[in-house]
Image (cartoon, rainbow, N blue to C red; front, side):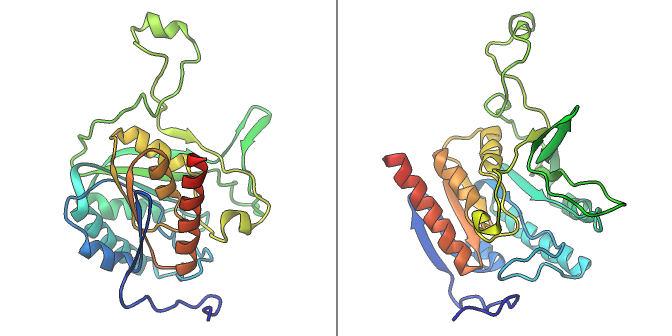
Length: 281
């Protein structure tokens, strides 16, 4: 029997585990699952937790009191720090809203005692250049606020000294004369800290797997390329519909995704299987 809309189903007494290729999915509460993971076993964490701005998740009430939400996220972060290796990267995608613009920064400040903010990346979802525009535009009916065209991607590390593969995550030079003139060995430069990664255009929520907070697979792919470790052990404690694991699979990494909602778990398993089948075809 399906849960009533907006109701939070009780998590299973025992976490359920699924394996698709090199990717492992744990259906259960992330705090419980993190406690069972081996310490210092993860190279890269990429995740987008609930934003606490009233999004309509199936199995999670996205409207806690702010201090309650921040305390909960801090508890999750303690678990993530325990499993992250000394040279690991933690990429946290989060956004506020026009009514709650401080929330991402409040969370980042709370995490200051656990991590170093090595890079702050702006994920640009839509942008206007001159009289042209690019990316997915979501209208906002307001006389006070601007359209929100970006989200935050905080890159945390334990000590702020993690070496990155900036060129693998980079872009070709626009002016090719810069290659020889500046002594570069290849036609690649750092992408910088503003990443334009638009969504594919969709017409309804079914095309986003009925999930209110998905991100394009190119976003976790760029994170993995930037960290630059082959065969990395990847973790997403708020897996959703499996986009981080999909990126890990395509780049030959080993992923673990944790998700409490059974329907999102089913979608993630299907996406991973279909992607494996397409790669083998």
